[in-house]
Image (cartoon, rainbow, N blue to C red; front, side):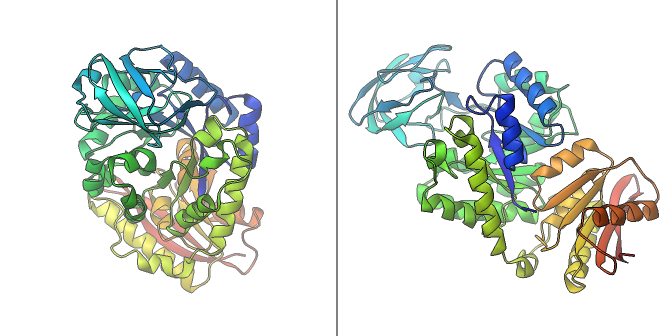
Length: 472
């Protein structure tokens, strides 16, 4: 199986039932739905429809945070040329053009100063402010094409909103009763942003993914990871708010930190950007994706490529090929020993420490005995994510009595999840696990399988048992 996961963003190009089914066949593991586009009722309707089409995959809902967007440029690329004069106006539900850009946030244009720079989208197109005000003027300093409703990156002093914003709160309220697995939180700058968002959402069955895309997010990385369930390297805004030459190094740092804490880590933005319209990616893009795999990332994300691209399914097929080839060169034997400090949370509770130690022992046993699979019996998914951080060469099979956990594990590296009815006897769980991997063809008689299971101790679930089983 492919170990590295594929996240695909749903948009106008991929929103039909037929394309969604084809994307699943092509290898998508997680569908991302941006709640920054469209009103809340239409976003909820889309979420429910995709849930019905993809009952076994993970759904990621991405809330916008304090990000400011432009009014729609439409579905046909609009060219902005260096030296063009642009008028900026504060307006909702107004279209943008090559001469006039609607800014969907009241009060921000008057906060600008002459000479401030505004980046559009992922920063390829930039404007220099020449005259602030409710109707501001700017000149294009870096040209290019724009379409849809791109984000506008303004000076960070303007984006001082606490998370969740009022707009986010309305979306979180609407999401409380909906079926989805991951909530991506934009512009996370501190642990407080995640804690506050979790409080408003008021659900413990949804993973919170912190998008690292600001200088503050990088500076507070450890504390953010410790209270988050997953991490995204959001390279678009990160590359605007940090020196562009720092992004590759920050990506490696964020990926490694996330893995040490046993968090799924997604690398996002411009992975196969040229395939938004081209039939093949650039050599640089292929190398970028392969290097993300070699860095150990849990998943790679497609944004505009599948949301507004000419061939969303073809992009996923290409991504799948690149990932599979890169995984053949991954250093499975030495990865686990190179992780350094083995942390799976910043809290350091006894239950967490025991789970960390036992999963480490299970990984070493599996490597030394050349086991054909590692099986983890889990309710929350923590045990599976803890063993996944070692990136073992053999498959990781999760046995879980939680359908939500089974879907969430589609975001974790190298995991095959199986939903089962709850069981209390560890012998029954082990027997079921061995039967499943024999049926799947992962093991045959005489093979060695490592099985991890847990118990309730002091009210907390602890993975405290490792068994080496010879398949009968």
